[in-house]
Length: 465
Picture 1 (cartoon, rainbow, N blue to C red):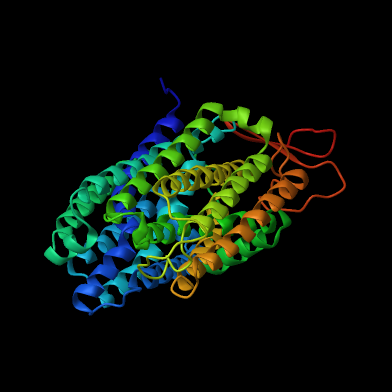
Picture 2 (tube, rainbow, N blue to C red):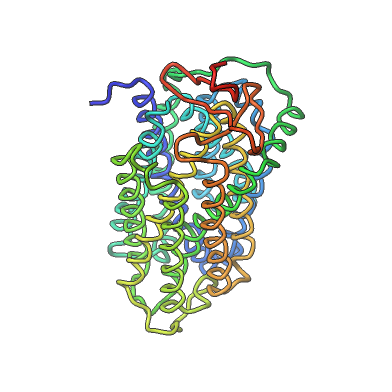
């Protein structure tokens, strides 16, 4: 039974995200194939408008992440997330009247709203975690959140059980599902409005201006720990772009996988959800025991899993699968079992990396959570923007080469960061002025996070400050 107030708040928060992303990810998973079907029906929308929409979304998300921190601090994490929920609902509603103008405008609105949502979520999560609950709560958040992907996959399976996307678009029946998605997102928004106050609110500081926020954010950005983590952040953006849009499109467009690839796409979504939930569940159970392995080697394992999956996808899928429907093959005949297995392992590896990133930031940047999470989402959004911008130009081989390179770099930098700056027990070096400094030859300052707050130990005989 959960008795910790902070953990109960995290569960409430996670339920809101589960509801929102049950709706949004279900729609996101089929966005490009749905738009491509609408293009074939009317010719009034660009066949790659789905990729363009994602690129616009993440471009505005990238910019907004750098400047919204003072607004999040002023209006609180909860109401920042509410703003984000509203933006998602506005975007989803546009699929009732699908057209390029509304799609691109609301993609920009969603990019800004998503920055409020995710920076607010990072801040609220940090304010409800202690040193004892960081690993457990971040993994718990991931597990509950990712039930949205599993539920969305099941929903899509029954949606496409006897018909495909083309038929649903031709009859306009898909609009019924858009109404359902918007209603579920609204329930998540309502639950967020009634979230309790954070359990461990940090001491109030002077309100920052946007320029002060930018200076503080760029100061953190320039520090060696964040520079090393930036490779992992970038890879999370590439990874998510691949499994949420590009790889599902490959499944949908590979005609040799069967007559109803829309149903197979739904099964792929279910497999990805199971992989994400399984990984999150493992780390939720492990809790602080995960520190024995070390965040660095956990990230290395996840990157190795992804690299092996990239090789399998390259072998079994045609190179032009992300761009248009194709009846070609890769090195081997496309296999349904390989496609679904890769989906599950993509989700499994992605969840491992994401939970470790959250653990890094909650543990190491507890006093600068808004800045740290903004930078995380900034780098991730840059990668996603690039991934979607190149999607209509890059073949599958080009995508996999790019992502594989960053997977390797992420594993290497995770090891370096852990050895140099994020030790197994003392994860971060920070002075009581809340400014970040690189490691020096002297004994590092240590912070112990407890239920009552943070205790800072100085270099002078480890005396408390």
